[in-house]
Image (cartoon, rainbow, N blue to C red; front, side, top):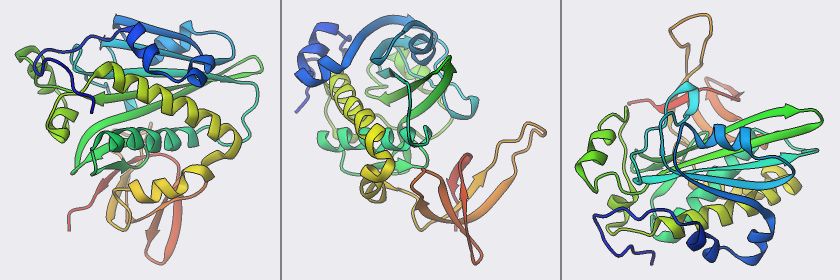
Length: 281
């Protein structure tokens, strides 16, 4: 059980402690581990500052401009969550890079379930959900540099958003129903051990995906999929209009490239991007 010593006092991240919780295999795969007090975005930092092949990780206590999906800001109070970005550089990736986001979401859920968060799952493509409220999320960003493909996976987890009034004031700015691990589990956890477990699992995920694609993660996705079989609304981003086109259908899982499958009337259609929400019956 990952119990922190002081329930209402945030545990600061510590590089030595995190490395101490990693397996020898993961430490050999991890070329850099950086912990920052404040940064605009761990994803931006990782993309701009980590060079070379291999996997590098960046953690921050606080982000001033954390990135979320669809151009949103990821809000996380100082020392109230996990803000983690891992960068992987590939010479060649035989599978669609977008599938890494799906595989990583599965891996995060496995870590959280191992802590005892039994009802945690995923809302396509990578929102981490508990009882309809957002517990965390992921953001995949990539670019090409010469003949290399650079990819960053950003992971944000709400750990304890209510340990002081300053944290609570930031939490109030989150624009959707949310929950943190303290509420889910009923006890505080060590942020250092959680960070280590996320890094450990993600390093393995990146290795598995580069060899097998999404095939190794499909069974777990089906188990964790929180919208399967439900009527949903998919909002499609549009650069030409402020209003987002909406598509209604029944969620039917994903294909082996990570695209959302919707049953629309008698047709089964696939979508690679958009914002999905469960339609009220």
